[in-house]
Amino acid sequence: MNSFGRKFSFTTFGESHGKALGVVVDGVPAGLKIDEDFIQSELDKRKPGKSEFETARKEADKVEILSGVFEGVATGTPIAMVIYNTNQKSRDYSNIKDVFRPGHADFTYFHKYGIRDYRGGGRSSARETAARVAAGAIAKLLLREVGVEFMSGISQVHTIASQKLDFEYAKQSIIYALDPTQEEAQKGVILEAKNRHDSVGGVATVVIKNAPIGLGEPLYYKLDGVLAEAMMGINAVKAVEIGDGIASTTLYGSQNNDQIREDGFESNHAGGILGGISNGEDIVLKVHFKPTPSIFQEQHTITKENENVDFSLKGRHDPCVAIRGSVVAESMAALVIADMLLLNMGSNIAGVKKYYE
Image: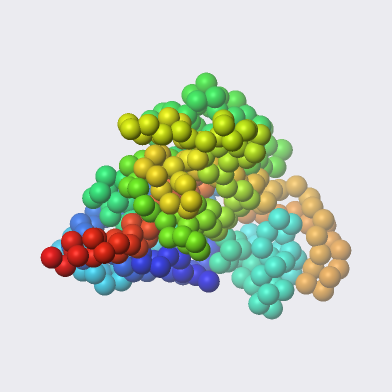
């Protein structure tokens, strides 16, 4: 499947080393102001080649809107956007034409389809996520109209975890570090791994503020379930926590329950979601990324003919995919909330009557 969402949906297309990537966003309300500079600024956060902590592949990731916008506003028809690839080096992948890279989707794509685009992983490459960020920017423009805000950053690199979460600081950090006291250590472990031709994993924290109460469609389109699905659909994500997540399994119910008073909840262990529905508190996600599988050490693998071989990878890759992945996670969160917002509008008769009065 290449589409996501029900009321506010998007479909992406393109490959890592193809001519272009793109996305078609459907369900955008007519009249929404489309700020192209904002869309580009979101893509600039994710684009590669900005520092030594990212892949050396330099792409401008310049977005071009093809349809669905007239005189700066959405027309209510599908918004199509394209991002051209300009810095491919497909020759770097000629040595893996007939072998499967450990930790990648090469093996599974080939056995599923009987064919694969070996140039940078083709469709399975994280390059595709540029299209999701473009779609997420449209979602953010919609949610900005009702005051919903998004924050994200890196809360852990390898074993070095943040002791505090400073989202304003993360905006100026080259690795989107949330804790200035841990940033240098986190940078150090990334570069140490890179110098050994290795990679490290990390954790991105995403916070959604001012989401209205009532988002989520029980029982089979719960807000937390769809957010988890959205995050797990991002390349290299292996786990998602909401609120206290795994830590809640070590608590008693008396500790974990978010007690309530007339002025609101006394705590937020649930991460802003109860029964699959938003409760008005901050929605808090922790998204766990595995180490980038593209490393430059000799590894064991097999060929398409099931023969054992040793090989060394070429190319340009992120030593810690979580850094740019945090931008994608924030975008996917926005896409989910936009979808839930529109779905919720008809959840009770009062809302329907209000619209048509």
